[in-house]
Amino acid sequence: MKNDRYIVIVGCGRLGSHLANRLSIEGNSVVVIDNKESTFENLSLDFSGFRIEGDATRLSVLKEAKLGDADVLIATTREDNVNLMVAQVAHKLFAVPKVIARVFDPRREEMYKQLGVETICPTTVAAELFLIEASKGGKR
Amino acid sequence: MKVLLVGGGKTLYFLCRKFTSSGHDVIIVDSDRDECVSLSRQLTATVVAGDGSDSRILDEAGVRGADVVLAITSNDQDNLVICQLAMRTFGVRRAMALANDPENATVFRDLGLDAFSTTEIIGSLIEQHAAIDQVRNLLPVGEGKVNVTEVSVDTGSPVAGKLLKDIELPGNALVAVIIRENETIVPRGGSSIIAGDRVVLITLPENHGKVIEAFTGERA
Image 1 (cartoon, chains in turn blue, purple):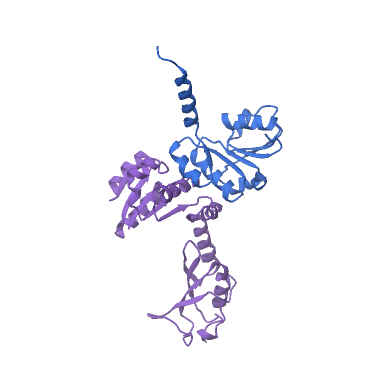
Image 2: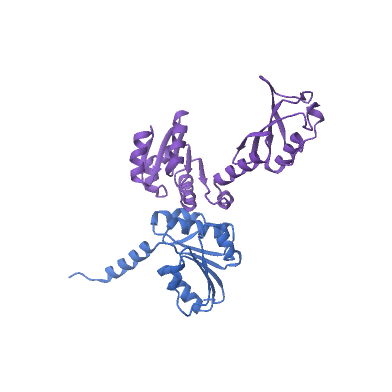
């Protein structure tokens, strides 16, 4: 994996901060956006990137994060619609080459794939893993 | 026409009343259950309680049969997803999104939606009303792409006493109607404008200021 990329992460909750810490320690330039300043406490001491307090559905906030220069955008807020909007804006308006959105509702995934937004649904991913593990169990 | 409105609050209530009184069928989707109860008592519309950005709720509300979907919630991200679901998943021909953040109106248009910003509309109304007393009834048409303006011509106006064809107007501007006392004149080049007339102008945002200036002599 290349570790010198410019990565913008929207949402600094459990998932967002975990990704931000990992990607920053690996050597990437990371910017984290969250509208609650207290969430930045989730970042580790080793995190060497930037923090922006603001609403990522506002264009001015995305411009402040220099989204036009980003190699990757990851949208991880707890609101599907925020992630889907930010991902589309990143893809269409800022031409970010790699855009990934967390989407909780699996029914929204298909439509957004068509719109060029790559989505990851934690429910589907977890369900797959559970099914694989469950299939390993034999019959008593 | 069948209109599906997603949102809440007074705007939703009054919009619904306006549409039903002009004979349109209205369906409301509102996530506030208490508000839904009171809306269904006050309005002759179908009211569905739920999240309008959830495809099941939209389907249940009958989005497939809607001619227009109007998303006016206070969250821009929800308005975007509601309109995209309506158009892409359910094949609704027209969906319009309110951009609470005026900058998002452009964003929505770039993403292929019809969008409007009430802040921009009201803001331009106030600016242009307050700027010149002679200018009235400014109405943005086509999401603000065209303005309809009524201007009173007084004796100090640079156009008073002139023939329409002698008035120098920027391109893409039109004098639609001259109102003289109780008479309404659809003008031709040979029509004259006299003090006391009210003229209705059709302009574009880029030439609006110049046209108003030509008729009032003041800088808009």
